[in-house]
Image 1 (cartoon, rainbow, N blue to C red):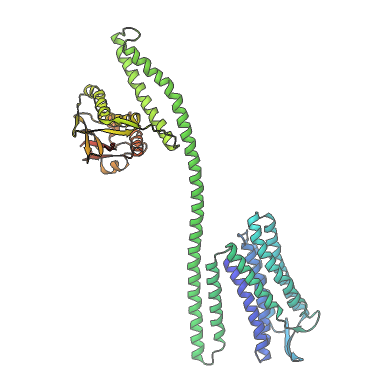
Image 2 (image 1 turned 180 degrees about the horizontal axis):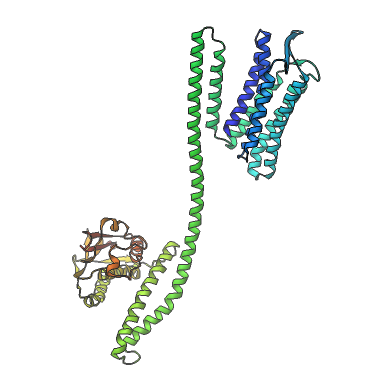
Amino acid sequence: MTRWFAAFAWSLAFWALTLIGFRAVPDLDIAAVFLRMAYISAICIAASLSLFMHYFPEAQPFGIVRKLFFTLSALAVGIFLMLPGTLITDVRIENGVRAGTQTISGYNIFTAYFVFYYFGALYLLYKRWRTAVAETRTHISYIIWSVLFLGLFGVFFNLILPSPWIHEWRFTWVGPIFSTIVVFSVAYAIAKYRLMDVRILAAELLTITIVFLLFTQIFFGESARELLTHSTFFVLAAFFGWFLIRSIRREAKQREELARLTIELERANAELKKIDQRKSEFLSLASHQLRTPLTAIKGYASMLLEGSFGAVSETLQKPLDTIFKSSDRLVRIIEDFLTISRIEQNRLVYTFATADLRKIVSELAEDFKQAAEARNLAFSFAVTDEGDYRAQIDEGKIVQVISNVIDNALKYTPKGSVAVTLGMTDGKTARVCVKDTGVGMDEETKKIIFEKFTRAKDANAVSTTGTGLGLYVAHELITAHKGRIWVESGGKGKGSTFCIELPLMSM
């Protein structure tokens, strides 16, 4: 689009220069050449404007037949007008004013061509204005009124008044003035509303101007050496100018593509956020609906095992124990899902209160000791530093995190031991570490282990019941307590150590 506006502006400028040359050169034969070139420039004005309108504000279908007709008609009319006697018969000085004589047939062909393409382009732009949205309508309106202003006054002063239908051709300066006004008006609209890439337009106009000026210098060479020098500079300027414009166009195209992809990405992100929100809502609803019956199943299984409804035969002990453990595992999973959905929706509520971490960890260690023995694992708990372990925490959520870490250690340790320690760092932070001799993990796994749905690579070989959610939840809960959680491991098969740090109350 910018190239055709540049061609339109350059055609107007060239037209004005040929009219100046027509008046300025002393030789009347050369003046006749300038006059023919003025008509050729006018044809270029109509042609470039028509192409500009075709691409503004966006390109329209332009078939090969139309392109061929467009090119051949412009070429045929241009060659016809350049032939001696077809349009300009002579140039003479009459009453002190330079004038030219045109043939009526040639002038009619020129006028028909100019009016058809010039006002046809305006009609095409008007059709687009009618179907455009409000903002685009404003942009198109500036172009329509500017070009229409040139068309009406230019046709009147430069086609009708000087035509052979009225009197002999007489040059008038009004046309170039209107042309200048139109170019500046359209350029203002382009700059204000960013209708085109101004850098491309400026580069094209500047390059064309320089190349044109160097081209004209060829005809003023007084020797073969000057002719060769001017020709060389013209060719070099044309080549490097073309290369410069091509580079700027490529950069602009890449920038437009990047902007388009950015918009598409923003739309995709917005849609993904909506989908994620719906997923979280569904997850929360489904988890709530599942937790109630599972809690009942777990409760009744526990009561049956404890003999609350009477003695249970040994035959039923194992099935009931399986029901209890399975329902307990499902309740934990559902609790993780609920926590995740609340975290994602910023609805997770924390109830902070003073609690003794030493009491919490020791009670949990006692609870898991029996489970470790059932797996033939050595289990130990030790407090490495004496002191006050009181902290402002949400006790339920900290219990959930530490339980999850110890449970994972038992689950992913086929043989060996699990050791739980509680200590202090600088007297202001409590550190809970759970060390096992289990499957361990490599450096890559350690980087992603706290992400959703992530498990160690060899985890399935030991336990198939993990969901990859527990450590993600643990990380989010510990972060909300202004603490931190991390893992250390010597590699696969070398065990792991999970550590949790929480700030203690200042004394």
